[in-house]
Length: 349
Image 1 (cartoon, helix red, strand yellow):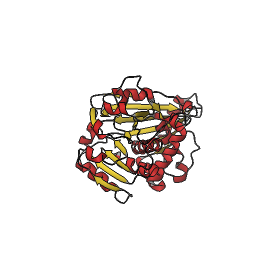
Image 2 (cartoon, rainbow, N blue to C red; image 1 turned 120 degrees about the vertical axis):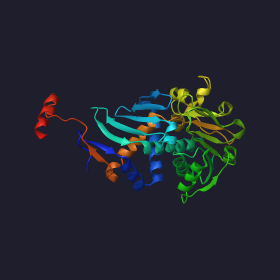
Image 3 (spheres, one colour; image 1 turned 90 degrees about the vertical axis):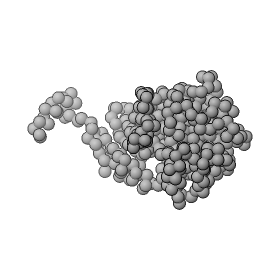
Image 4 (cartoon, rainbow, N blue to C red; image 1 turned 120 degrees about the horizontal axis):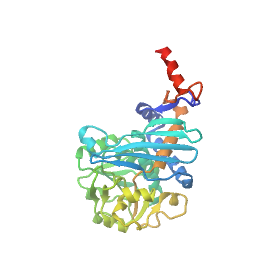
C-alpha cells in the first residue's frame, strides 16, 4: 500500500483505528499523540485559531473544529449529546479530515470517536506534566464514563500515577472503569462520594457529561497544592466547579476566546487572568511555581489538538498498513470536462 495517489484518500475506519492502537500500544499511542500536541503548541503562531463553530440544540451540540498551519488544513466534526447514553448511543462521536493546503486535496479521512478520547487524555496528561505537583502519584477521577480509562492511562504514562480514586453517580460506571483497569498497574479505590474520592489525591479530574451548570467540586473539597483537570465543562451552560474554586486557582487554558465561551471561566468576568498552555510549554510563562499553588486546567478541547492527533495517525499508516483507499476525488481526463466524465461512465453501466 502507498499514499502517493492524490485522487485516492486513505481512510481510517473504527476497526483500523483499534488495530493501530493495539499494534502500537495504548500507552505508546497516548504518549505519541501528546508529543505531537506539544510540538504543535510550541509553534502556536503558525496556526489559524478560531473558536469552534457550534450548532446548539436542546438535545446537545454539533460542532466543527478547523485549523491550519499553512501546509496542512484539518477539521473535526464532533457532537456532544449527554442524553444519548440513556438511549444506547455514544455521547460523543466524531470524524476528521486532513488536507494539503497547496491544492486543497484531502490526504486523510479518519474516525475520531476513539481518537478524540485519546487526544483528550493525552492533552490532559501533557498539561499536567507542567502543572501537577512533583511526585504526584494519586489521582481522583470523578465521572467514570467513556473518557475515564483513557485519562487514567494518560496520567500513568506521563506522570507515573499509580493510585486511582474513582467516583460516579452511577456505581455501574465505576465498576466498569475499575474492571477495565485491572492489571494496568493501578491501585484502584471505588469511592461512594466525591468528597471521599478527592481525599489524598494530588490530581483531581472531573469528567462528567450533564449539559448544565453543575457543582461537582465544592470549594471545601479542594486543598492547597492540588492540580485540577476540569474536562467535563465544554460548552455554554455546562460547568463542573464552584466559582470559589476558580478564584483560588491559577487557571490555564488552551485558547482563551473559546474557553471564555465554553469553559469553567464562563462563570468569571472576561478580564479574569488566565494563561494559555502554549506560553507555558515554550517557557514564556510559569506553570507550577510552588507546592501550595492550586493549578486548574480548564480543558474544553481545541482544534490544534485534533490536528496533532490526525497528524500522528497519518504518520502511522505506512508502519501499520491499517487503512483503506477511498475513491472520493473525481479525476476526469480533462480537468475542465467533469460532465463528460459522468456521461462516459454510462458505457460501464
